[in-house]
Length: 82
Image: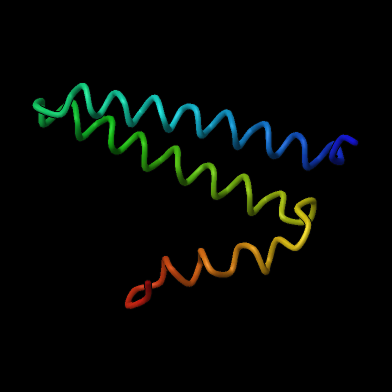
């Protein structure tokens, strides 16, 4: 059984962005001894990871039990927690 179309689109977009994030991470590793290069690739990785969060949040209605699943991640991101 296939997931609903909106959920499938969201998950496809998330997987694509995670692949970009992995590529950014490997680029950062390759540029580790180049301060400018590693900084640029880490900034790209951070920006890409934020797009994953945005995609998930914008499709939360299509993700079963999203609020309960997502709440611990939000709590861990708060200062003074986790």
